Picture 1 (cartoon, rainbow, N blue to C red):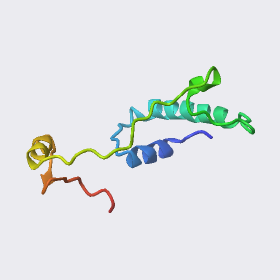
Picture 2: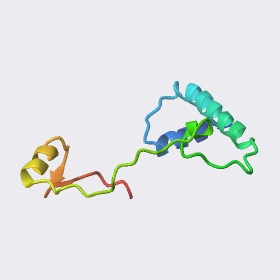
Picture 3: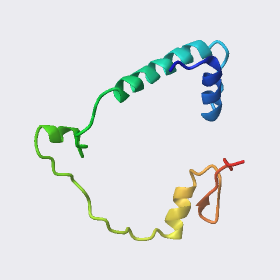
Length: 102
């Protein structure tokens, strides 16, 4: 399936990318290459192939290093305020983000 320039413009809009008309042909070519790779991967018969937890588990047994699932102590107000200094917008200790659903 080859993408058209209309498809490229639509994908760019969804990704909130501003692309110039000069950039569209190159982006179209790159996206079509990616789509070609996806088609190649989808054409491979994977029936009966078990998923791997780790790529090297084909060669030898891999033991996953998992940490204990424990809660961390609650930060103090001073620590929270220090961390929130980098936030572009915040209120009452919460990050404020722009609305994305119209």
